[in-house]
Image (tube, rainbow, N blue to C red; front, side):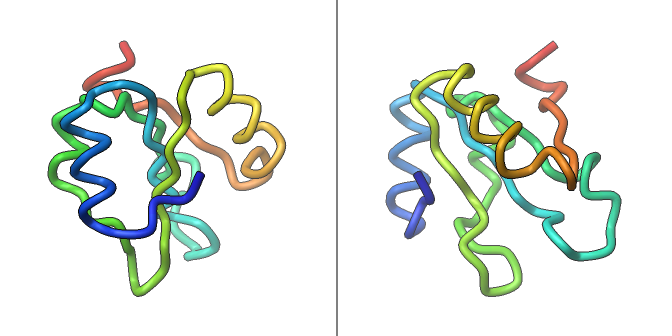
Length: 89
C-alpha cells in the first residue's frame, strides 16, 4: 500500500508494526539496488524520511515481511532492492 501523506508515514513509524519500502532510486539511474531499501516501520531511518521523493510518492507499507518481499519480487526485482542494515541485520 502506497503511503499518501506525511501524517500516515509518521503514524506507521510510531505504531512500529510492519515494514516500509523506500523506493528512492526507482528509474533514477542511481544504484537502485543499494538505494531501494526495506525497513521495519519502527526503524530510526523511517523517522528521517519524507513521504515523497522528487515529487513522487515513493514509500510503501506492508503488514509483514513476507507481504513486502512478495511485492518486491513481483514489482522491483529488475531494479533490485536491499534490506536496511540498521534494522534488518
